[in-house]
Image (cartoon, rainbow, N blue to C red):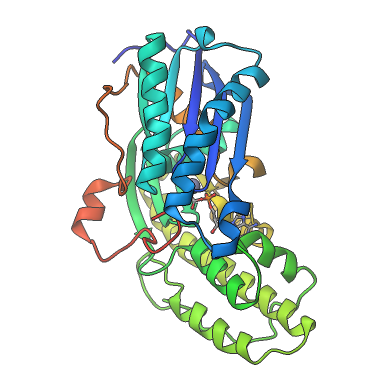
Length: 366
Ligand code: KG4
Ligand code: ZN
Protein backbone atom coordinates (compact mmCIF):
# COMPACT_ATOMS: atom_id res chain seq x y z
CA UNK A 1 0.00 0.00 0.00
CA UNK A 2 1.46 3.36 -1.04
CA UNK A 3 1.29 6.14 1.53
CA UNK A 4 1.20 9.41 -0.33
CA UNK A 5 -0.86 11.25 2.28
CA UNK A 6 1.31 14.38 2.18
CA UNK A 7 1.04 14.71 -1.64
CA UNK A 8 -2.12 16.56 -2.62
CA UNK A 9 -4.40 14.73 -5.02
CA UNK A 10 -6.31 16.89 -7.49
CA UNK A 11 -8.96 14.72 -9.09
CA UNK A 12 -11.52 15.32 -11.81
CA UNK A 13 -14.75 13.46 -10.94
CA UNK A 14 -17.40 12.46 -13.51
CA UNK A 15 -20.96 11.36 -12.74
CA UNK A 16 -23.42 10.14 -15.40
CA UNK A 17 -25.28 7.24 -13.76
CA UNK A 18 -28.79 8.71 -14.02
CA UNK A 19 -30.21 12.07 -15.11
CA UNK A 20 -27.47 14.43 -13.96
CA UNK A 21 -24.36 15.05 -16.06
CA UNK A 22 -21.83 16.22 -13.48
CA UNK A 23 -18.14 17.04 -13.26
CA UNK A 24 -16.13 18.38 -10.31
CA UNK A 25 -12.58 18.97 -9.18
CA UNK A 26 -11.63 18.01 -5.60
CA UNK A 27 -8.30 18.46 -3.85
CA UNK A 28 -7.45 15.99 -1.07
CA UNK A 29 -4.51 16.73 1.17
CA UNK A 30 -3.72 15.19 4.57
CA UNK A 31 -7.25 13.81 4.75
CA UNK A 32 -8.85 17.22 4.12
CA UNK A 33 -11.06 17.59 1.07
CA UNK A 34 -11.64 20.91 -0.72
CA UNK A 35 -14.16 21.16 -3.54
CA UNK A 36 -12.51 23.40 -6.16
CA UNK A 37 -15.54 23.23 -8.47
CA UNK A 38 -18.75 21.26 -8.89
CA UNK A 39 -20.96 21.50 -11.97
CA UNK A 40 -24.26 19.60 -12.22
CA UNK A 41 -26.19 19.71 -15.49
CA UNK A 42 -29.73 18.53 -14.83
CA UNK A 43 -31.83 16.80 -17.50
CA UNK A 44 -35.10 17.15 -15.57
CA UNK A 45 -36.76 19.19 -18.34
CA UNK A 46 -35.97 16.49 -20.96
CA UNK A 47 -37.55 13.72 -18.85
CA UNK A 48 -40.44 15.68 -17.30
CA UNK A 49 -42.98 14.91 -20.08
CA UNK A 50 -42.49 11.17 -19.35
CA UNK A 51 -42.88 11.41 -15.54
CA UNK A 52 -39.53 9.70 -14.88
CA UNK A 53 -36.08 9.09 -16.33
CA UNK A 54 -35.95 7.64 -19.87
CA UNK A 55 -32.62 5.76 -20.24
CA UNK A 56 -32.09 6.48 -23.97
CA UNK A 57 -32.78 10.19 -23.55
CA UNK A 58 -30.42 10.28 -20.55
CA UNK A 59 -27.54 8.56 -22.37
CA UNK A 60 -27.84 10.86 -25.38
CA UNK A 61 -27.96 13.98 -23.21
CA UNK A 62 -24.82 12.83 -21.34
CA UNK A 63 -22.96 12.40 -24.66
CA UNK A 64 -23.99 15.88 -25.76
CA UNK A 65 -22.92 17.69 -22.60
CA UNK A 66 -20.14 15.78 -20.77
CA UNK A 67 -17.35 17.52 -22.68
CA UNK A 68 -18.57 21.06 -21.95
CA UNK A 69 -19.41 20.24 -18.32
CA UNK A 70 -15.93 18.82 -17.66
CA UNK A 71 -14.37 21.91 -19.31
CA UNK A 72 -16.51 24.14 -17.09
CA UNK A 73 -15.51 22.27 -13.94
CA UNK A 74 -11.84 22.84 -14.83
CA UNK A 75 -12.45 26.50 -15.71
CA UNK A 76 -14.35 27.11 -12.43
CA UNK A 77 -11.42 25.54 -10.55
CA UNK A 78 -9.02 27.73 -12.58
CA UNK A 79 -7.11 24.61 -13.62
CA UNK A 80 -6.29 22.72 -16.82
CA UNK A 81 -6.11 18.98 -17.49
CA UNK A 82 -2.34 19.27 -16.92
CA UNK A 83 -2.89 20.18 -13.23
CA UNK A 84 -4.78 16.98 -12.41
CA UNK A 85 -3.27 13.99 -10.60
CA UNK A 86 -6.11 11.60 -11.41
CA UNK A 87 -9.54 11.09 -12.96
CA UNK A 88 -12.47 9.30 -11.30
CA UNK A 89 -15.66 8.25 -13.09
CA UNK A 90 -18.78 6.49 -11.84
CA UNK A 91 -18.65 2.91 -13.20
CA UNK A 92 -21.99 1.79 -11.69
CA UNK A 93 -24.55 1.04 -10.42
CA UNK A 94 -26.94 2.96 -12.65
CA UNK A 95 -28.41 3.23 -16.14
CA UNK A 96 -25.66 1.52 -18.06
CA UNK A 97 -25.87 3.64 -21.24
CA UNK A 98 -25.21 6.76 -19.17
CA UNK A 99 -22.54 5.13 -17.01
CA UNK A 100 -20.63 4.16 -20.18
CA UNK A 101 -20.56 7.80 -21.33
CA UNK A 102 -18.85 9.14 -18.19
CA UNK A 103 -16.57 6.12 -17.83
CA UNK A 104 -15.44 6.32 -21.49
CA UNK A 105 -14.80 10.04 -21.12
CA UNK A 106 -12.74 9.33 -17.98
CA UNK A 107 -10.74 6.65 -19.82
CA UNK A 108 -10.01 9.07 -22.67
CA UNK A 109 -8.72 11.71 -20.22
CA UNK A 110 -6.66 9.07 -18.42
CA UNK A 111 -5.10 7.84 -21.67
CA UNK A 112 -4.49 11.25 -23.23
CA UNK A 113 -3.00 12.78 -20.07
CA UNK A 114 -1.30 9.73 -18.57
CA UNK A 115 -3.42 10.02 -15.40
CA UNK A 116 -4.51 7.15 -13.15
CA UNK A 117 -8.17 6.19 -13.59
CA UNK A 118 -10.48 5.23 -10.72
CA UNK A 119 -13.72 3.42 -11.66
CA UNK A 120 -15.90 4.53 -8.74
CA UNK A 121 -18.93 2.80 -7.24
CA UNK A 122 -21.63 5.52 -7.17
CA UNK A 123 -22.70 4.30 -3.71
CA UNK A 124 -19.15 4.70 -2.39
CA UNK A 125 -19.44 8.28 -3.64
CA UNK A 126 -22.56 8.81 -1.51
CA UNK A 127 -20.81 7.05 1.41
CA UNK A 128 -17.95 9.61 1.41
CA UNK A 129 -20.12 12.63 0.50
CA UNK A 130 -20.41 13.91 4.09
CA UNK A 131 -16.60 14.13 4.16
CA UNK A 132 -16.88 16.95 1.59
CA UNK A 133 -18.16 19.20 4.38
CA UNK A 134 -16.22 17.97 7.43
CA UNK A 135 -13.47 15.57 8.43
CA UNK A 136 -15.22 12.38 9.54
CA UNK A 137 -13.04 9.47 10.60
CA UNK A 138 -13.73 5.82 9.79
CA UNK A 139 -15.51 3.73 10.93
CA UNK A 140 -19.07 5.07 10.83
CA UNK A 141 -22.63 3.84 10.59
CA UNK A 142 -24.18 4.93 7.27
CA UNK A 143 -27.80 5.30 6.25
CA UNK A 144 -27.80 5.58 2.46
CA UNK A 145 -31.18 6.83 1.27
CA UNK A 146 -31.66 7.84 -2.36
CA UNK A 147 -33.93 7.25 -5.33
CA UNK A 148 -32.48 3.81 -6.03
CA UNK A 149 -31.12 2.74 -2.64
CA UNK A 150 -32.11 2.38 0.99
CA UNK A 151 -29.62 0.60 3.23
CA UNK A 152 -27.78 0.70 6.54
CA UNK A 153 -24.07 -0.08 6.36
CA UNK A 154 -21.09 -0.22 8.64
CA UNK A 155 -18.31 1.60 6.76
CA UNK A 156 -14.96 0.49 8.19
CA UNK A 157 -12.77 2.21 5.58
CA UNK A 158 -12.35 2.81 1.84
CA UNK A 159 -14.27 0.04 0.07
CA UNK A 160 -14.94 -1.85 3.33
CA UNK A 161 -18.69 -1.93 3.87
CA UNK A 162 -20.87 -4.40 5.76
CA UNK A 163 -24.61 -4.26 5.16
CA UNK A 164 -26.78 -4.24 8.28
CA UNK A 165 -30.15 -3.79 6.59
CA UNK A 166 -31.83 -2.84 3.32
CA UNK A 167 -35.24 -2.40 1.76
CA UNK A 168 -37.33 -5.42 0.88
CA UNK A 169 -39.24 -3.47 -1.78
CA UNK A 170 -38.90 0.22 -2.70
CA UNK A 171 -36.15 2.69 -1.87
CA UNK A 172 -37.08 5.68 0.35
CA UNK A 173 -36.64 8.24 -2.47
CA UNK A 174 -38.69 6.03 -4.77
CA UNK A 175 -41.50 6.03 -2.15
CA UNK A 176 -41.34 9.83 -2.01
CA UNK A 177 -41.42 10.02 -5.83
CA UNK A 178 -44.32 7.59 -6.29
CA UNK A 179 -46.49 9.08 -3.54
CA UNK A 180 -45.74 12.58 -4.85
CA UNK A 181 -47.05 11.44 -8.24
CA UNK A 182 -50.36 10.34 -6.69
CA UNK A 183 -50.59 13.84 -5.16
CA UNK A 184 -50.19 15.33 -8.64
CA UNK A 185 -46.61 16.55 -8.09
CA UNK A 186 -43.95 16.40 -10.78
CA UNK A 187 -40.71 14.38 -10.86
CA UNK A 188 -38.53 14.34 -8.79
CA UNK A 189 -41.23 14.15 -6.18
CA UNK A 190 -39.20 14.25 -2.94
CA UNK A 191 -38.39 17.97 -2.91
CA UNK A 192 -41.89 18.84 -4.23
CA UNK A 193 -43.57 16.75 -1.51
CA UNK A 194 -41.40 18.38 1.17
CA UNK A 195 -42.50 21.80 -0.06
CA UNK A 196 -46.19 20.81 -0.14
CA UNK A 197 -45.92 19.41 3.40
CA UNK A 198 -44.85 22.76 4.89
CA UNK A 199 -47.25 23.75 7.66
CA UNK A 200 -49.28 20.53 7.23
CA UNK A 201 -50.64 18.33 10.03
CA UNK A 202 -48.43 15.19 10.15
CA UNK A 203 -50.97 13.29 12.27
CA UNK A 204 -54.11 13.84 10.19
CA UNK A 205 -54.21 10.47 8.43
CA UNK A 206 -53.49 6.96 9.68
CA UNK A 207 -50.77 5.19 7.69
CA UNK A 208 -49.39 1.70 8.38
CA UNK A 209 -46.14 1.50 10.36
CA UNK A 210 -44.23 -1.07 8.33
CA UNK A 211 -42.08 -3.87 9.85
CA UNK A 212 -42.55 -2.39 13.32
CA UNK A 213 -42.18 -5.62 15.27
CA UNK A 214 -39.25 -6.99 13.25
CA UNK A 215 -35.91 -7.48 14.92
CA UNK A 216 -33.77 -6.78 11.85
CA UNK A 217 -32.82 -3.45 10.30
CA UNK A 218 -34.72 -3.83 7.02
CA UNK A 219 -37.11 -1.35 5.42
CA UNK A 220 -40.38 -1.60 3.52
CA UNK A 221 -42.35 1.21 1.90
CA UNK A 222 -44.81 -0.51 -0.42
CA UNK A 223 -47.70 -0.73 2.13
CA UNK A 224 -47.28 2.94 2.93
CA UNK A 225 -47.35 3.77 -0.77
CA UNK A 226 -50.58 1.80 -1.35
CA UNK A 227 -52.31 3.30 1.70
CA UNK A 228 -51.29 6.85 0.74
CA UNK A 229 -52.52 6.34 -2.84
CA UNK A 230 -55.90 5.18 -1.55
CA UNK A 231 -56.26 8.24 0.69
CA UNK A 232 -55.05 10.57 -2.09
CA UNK A 233 -57.86 9.36 -4.39
CA UNK A 234 -60.52 10.75 -2.04
CA UNK A 235 -58.98 14.15 -1.39
CA UNK A 236 -60.67 17.31 -2.61
CA UNK A 237 -58.99 20.31 -0.94
CA UNK A 238 -55.44 21.73 -0.94
CA UNK A 239 -55.43 21.57 2.88
CA UNK A 240 -56.05 17.81 2.72
CA UNK A 241 -53.28 17.32 0.18
CA UNK A 242 -50.88 19.35 2.33
CA UNK A 243 -51.77 17.30 5.43
CA UNK A 244 -51.36 14.00 3.56
CA UNK A 245 -47.93 15.15 2.30
CA UNK A 246 -46.93 16.01 5.89
CA UNK A 247 -48.26 12.65 7.16
CA UNK A 248 -46.36 10.69 4.48
CA UNK A 249 -43.13 12.60 5.13
CA UNK A 250 -43.43 11.97 8.89
CA UNK A 251 -44.14 8.25 8.29
CA UNK A 252 -41.06 7.82 6.06
CA UNK A 253 -38.87 9.79 8.50
CA UNK A 254 -40.23 7.72 11.34
CA UNK A 255 -39.45 4.39 9.68
CA UNK A 256 -35.93 5.54 8.77
CA UNK A 257 -35.37 6.64 12.39
CA UNK A 258 -36.79 3.40 13.88
CA UNK A 259 -34.63 1.10 11.74
CA UNK A 260 -31.57 3.32 12.25
CA UNK A 261 -32.13 3.24 16.01
CA UNK A 262 -32.05 -0.56 15.89
CA UNK A 263 -28.83 -0.54 13.83
CA UNK A 264 -27.27 1.99 16.22
CA UNK A 265 -27.98 -0.27 19.18
CA UNK A 266 -26.15 -3.20 17.53
CA UNK A 267 -23.33 -1.00 16.20
CA UNK A 268 -22.77 0.61 19.65
CA UNK A 269 -22.38 -2.83 21.26
CA UNK A 270 -19.75 -3.81 18.67
CA UNK A 271 -17.85 -0.53 19.05
CA UNK A 272 -18.05 -0.15 22.83
CA UNK A 273 -15.49 2.34 24.17
CA UNK A 274 -15.02 4.03 20.77
CA UNK A 275 -16.41 7.22 19.24
CA UNK A 276 -19.75 6.51 17.59
CA UNK A 277 -20.37 8.31 14.29
CA UNK A 278 -23.52 8.29 12.18
CA UNK A 279 -23.74 9.57 8.59
CA UNK A 280 -26.88 9.95 6.47
CA UNK A 281 -26.31 10.43 2.72
CA UNK A 282 -28.17 10.33 -0.61
CA UNK A 283 -30.95 12.51 -2.03
CA UNK A 284 -33.40 11.83 0.82
CA UNK A 285 -30.79 13.18 3.29
CA UNK A 286 -31.75 16.62 1.91
CA UNK A 287 -35.18 16.29 3.58
CA UNK A 288 -35.53 18.48 6.68
CA UNK A 289 -37.97 16.21 8.54
CA UNK A 290 -35.76 13.16 7.89
CA UNK A 291 -32.65 15.00 9.11
CA UNK A 292 -34.48 16.22 12.23
CA UNK A 293 -35.67 12.73 13.23
CA UNK A 294 -32.24 11.19 12.62
CA UNK A 295 -30.50 13.98 14.55
CA UNK A 296 -32.69 13.16 17.59
CA UNK A 297 -32.10 9.41 17.19
CA UNK A 298 -28.32 9.88 16.99
CA UNK A 299 -28.26 12.14 20.06
CA UNK A 300 -30.32 9.66 22.11
CA UNK A 301 -27.90 6.81 21.24
CA UNK A 302 -24.70 8.85 21.82
CA UNK A 303 -23.72 9.08 18.12
CA UNK A 304 -22.36 12.21 16.46
CA UNK A 305 -24.58 13.17 13.50
CA UNK A 306 -23.21 14.02 10.05
CA UNK A 307 -24.89 14.78 6.74
CA UNK A 308 -23.42 16.18 3.51
CA UNK A 309 -23.93 19.85 2.67
CA UNK A 310 -27.30 20.01 0.83
CA UNK A 311 -25.69 20.35 -2.62
CA UNK A 312 -23.89 17.03 -2.15
CA UNK A 313 -26.91 14.99 -0.96
CA UNK A 314 -28.32 14.50 -4.45
CA UNK A 315 -26.14 13.19 -7.28
CA UNK A 316 -22.99 15.21 -7.95
CA UNK A 317 -19.43 14.59 -9.14
CA UNK A 318 -17.59 16.06 -6.12
CA UNK A 319 -18.41 12.90 -4.15
CA UNK A 320 -17.09 10.77 -7.05
CA UNK A 321 -13.86 12.81 -7.21
CA UNK A 322 -13.38 12.40 -3.43
CA UNK A 323 -14.06 8.63 -3.52
CA UNK A 324 -11.47 8.44 -6.34
CA UNK A 325 -8.94 10.57 -4.45
CA UNK A 326 -9.29 8.42 -1.31
CA UNK A 327 -8.47 5.35 -3.41
CA UNK A 328 -5.49 7.06 -5.05
CA UNK A 329 -4.10 7.89 -1.58
CA UNK A 330 -4.08 4.13 -0.94
CA UNK A 331 -2.39 3.45 -4.30
CA UNK A 332 -5.57 1.99 -5.78
CA UNK A 333 -6.54 2.63 -9.41
CA UNK A 334 -8.24 0.73 -12.24
CA UNK A 335 -7.21 -0.51 -15.69
CA UNK A 336 -8.52 1.10 -18.88
CA UNK A 337 -10.71 -1.93 -19.56
CA UNK A 338 -12.77 -1.35 -16.38
CA UNK A 339 -16.41 -2.15 -17.20
CA UNK A 340 -19.65 -0.24 -16.63
CA UNK A 341 -21.84 -2.17 -14.16
CA UNK A 342 -25.63 -1.74 -13.99
CA UNK A 343 -25.65 -3.52 -10.57
CA UNK A 344 -22.83 -3.15 -8.09
CA UNK A 345 -23.67 -3.68 -4.40
CA UNK A 346 -21.34 -2.16 -1.80
CA UNK A 347 -21.40 -5.31 0.30
CA UNK A 348 -21.23 -7.95 -2.45
CA UNK A 349 -21.25 -10.86 0.03
CA UNK A 350 -24.49 -9.78 1.73
CA UNK A 351 -26.17 -9.04 -1.60
CA UNK A 352 -25.34 -12.52 -2.90
CA UNK A 353 -26.54 -14.17 0.33
CA UNK A 354 -29.98 -12.52 0.33
CA UNK A 355 -30.92 -11.56 -3.22
CA UNK A 356 -34.53 -10.88 -2.17
CA UNK A 357 -33.32 -7.89 -0.17
CA UNK A 358 -33.21 -5.18 -2.75
CA UNK A 359 -31.41 -1.91 -2.93
CA UNK A 360 -34.65 -0.52 -4.33
CA UNK A 361 -34.08 -1.92 -7.79
CA UNK A 362 -37.30 -0.65 -9.28
CA UNK A 363 -36.07 2.91 -8.78
CA UNK A 364 -35.02 5.34 -11.45
CA UNK A 365 -31.39 4.55 -10.74
CA UNK A 366 -31.81 0.79 -11.05
O1 KG4 B 1 -29.04 10.58 -4.54
P1 KG4 B 1 -29.99 10.92 -5.63
O2 KG4 B 1 -29.82 12.24 -6.35
O3 KG4 B 1 -30.00 9.84 -6.73
C1 KG4 B 1 -29.85 8.47 -6.51
O4 KG4 B 1 -28.69 7.99 -6.50
O5 KG4 B 1 -30.92 7.83 -6.36
O6 KG4 B 1 -31.45 10.83 -4.99
C2 KG4 B 1 -32.59 11.22 -5.69
C3 KG4 B 1 -33.80 10.91 -4.81
C4 KG4 B 1 -35.12 11.13 -5.51
O7 KG4 B 1 -35.96 10.02 -5.22
C5 KG4 B 1 -35.64 12.40 -4.87
O8 KG4 B 1 -37.05 12.50 -4.85
C6 KG4 B 1 -35.07 12.29 -3.47
O9 KG4 B 1 -33.78 11.76 -3.65
N1 KG4 B 1 -35.00 13.60 -2.81
C7 KG4 B 1 -35.74 13.96 -1.75
C8 KG4 B 1 -35.43 15.32 -1.47
N2 KG4 B 1 -34.48 15.73 -2.38
C9 KG4 B 1 -34.23 14.66 -3.19
N3 KG4 B 1 -36.65 13.27 -1.03
C10 KG4 B 1 -37.25 13.91 -0.01
N4 KG4 B 1 -37.01 15.21 0.31
C11 KG4 B 1 -36.12 15.95 -0.39
N5 KG4 B 1 -35.89 17.23 -0.07
ZN1 ZN C 1 -27.12 8.77 -6.17
